[in-house]
Amino acid sequence: MGAPLGRTVGPARGRSPHGSTAIVVTGGDPPHPTVRDRLPTGATVIAADSGLDHAIALGLRVDRVVGDLDSVSPEALAAAARAGTRIDRYPAAKDATDLELALDAARRIADRIVVVGGAAGRLDHLLGTALLLGSPAYAEVEMVAYLGPARIQVVRSQAVLAGTPGEQLSLLPLHGPAHGVSTAGLKYPLYKETLYPGSTRGVSNEFTETTAEVRLSSGVLLAVAAGPAGHSGSAPQAPLRTDEENA
Image 1 (tube, helix red, strand yellow):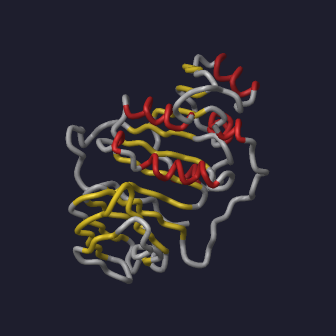
Image 2 (cartoon, one colour):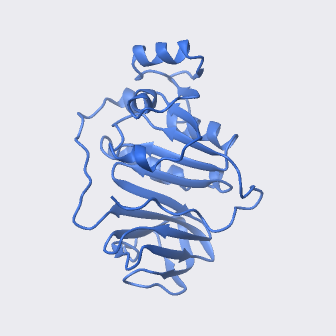
């Protein structure tokens, strides 16, 4: 298992450097079984619909459940109600996914969000989640995600990322070009380069040290660490869920 991704260097504009953290557990496929050891302690936990079942399986105490609640198990929902967990039910016909609703709830109370979810299931949901993490709506929030065995961090100016030598790291630009990208601690260094969406220029780099630094002058990057070299970290695959369960 690789080390968790490091924190972004310096707080984003308008944030306290000693603010709070929220964990958002998604619905759909279950998280990787090793993710529990990577999560911060003392964080507020928000579950997106059937993310409540996954959070309970991880041994997390859930503070809030958000979504249309069409896929959460009745047993988990009843247990949450008995425990006094806040439950925000939305109509099934809505303009945002359960995850987006949960992220919006998290950003109102925290300046660091850790998203936990699976990486299998519907491809459109996985792509939508990746784009959502880097949304301008969360520009003032430090965003980290564990999707299956992968670790993802949104980088908007600079970040120090922890890993292991040989571990793969891909830098993927979102919502337009990422300008002035420079790196240190990676096998294929970049120096003030521009990474364009649709290009694979930043794919499959490798850690040469236990940390790597990424800087950029403008734009947004997803720093995606696949896991240690020689270890896929794959979790057992559950059957694909229906459209309604992933909504």
